[in-house]
Image 1 (cartoon, rainbow, N blue to C red):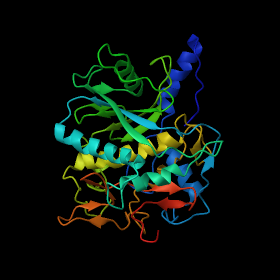
Image 2: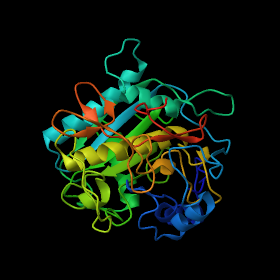
Image 3: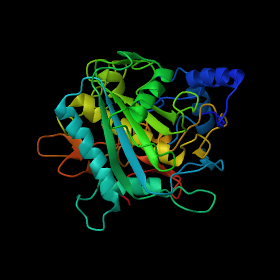
Image 4: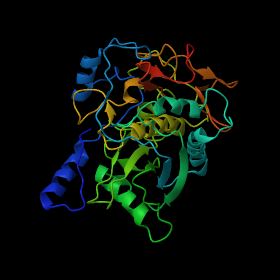
Length: 353
């Protein structure tokens, strides 16, 4: 992603430049392994640089995750959520349970069994800023807004997503807190909302808001509900694309393919927001406009031995549902994260940890 400078005042030409960048700077994420369906030029260049035969969960000399001197989130992190559209209460409960399990990382007592969501976040915590301070372990679930009447319609662009956030932080009644320093803004669209590039090349993305639109620079992530639109694209491995022949979908741990698929995308985006909030901190690759970030390197990897079309070894409950993390009374399947210490993808369900 290309770094975009922001200031208190803007002239017309600068605003025009930012509007262009809004459509080109954000690279989205799809949850299947990156060596499948590699069509975009940026994906091809990354594959060439890192080597298509790399064993993803093992150490690799081809991957050079670098720090580019930008900030990471070292203070307490508060996640503010915007529920956009018509959300089923059951779907919301699953997502809230995952976010609450992340907030459990700052508790001294263990309230989730190992391997836990909190243990998964410890890999994210390994990343530091210029002072050597680590990403915060303290994650709080903050305020939420329900935009159930589709304030900006049922078809959103990347710029109108920022307009939705503006509406949430400037609402006359119960606005979201404006917290540029420690707040993360998570915009979740319901299954009947179309988003620019959703299902074609996008399952979720993160960036920061432009002062020219929102009035503030706020790190945010968007993730879409793919349950009725494209589960085979955005809910892997609970639904499998047709071209991945010979593979059977996993049974989802919360009996909800669309939302269980969202969980891993949410985790992916939050980890990268914490380590690269202004898209000038931690990433690999030579192109800053299309960075390969700490979760991108581990797409499709959920357990030991993972790589290529193999997800790795994961756990199964008594009903045959697959998971690799325990939360607070729920279980989740979440992709691994690149560890700067091991130079490898890692998760708390690793067999050789």
